[in-house]
Image (cartoon, rainbow, N blue to C red; front, side):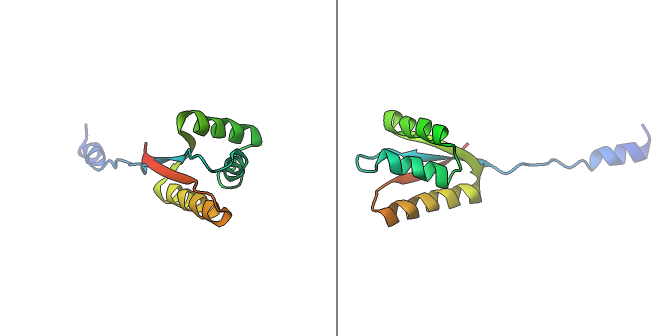
Length: 99
């Protein structure tokens, strides 16, 4: 191996991808199923069918996965859910967990 080839190998860069975060909607006894579906369509851009399936997960399993995003986007989505719920008088909560 020539010295120039060795030099190139020594300078390899490792690419680190940003951490991803799962965003969940949490179940409560007050928020309507229709409102949860609306949130999933308007904030998470789910189809009506996808939104209904996630809403049923929330209802049956106490939480439902809405999507996986970089930190900043996940944080924004959580805040959008909280703001929309508060504006509509619902106690709906969303959380994020590192993948």
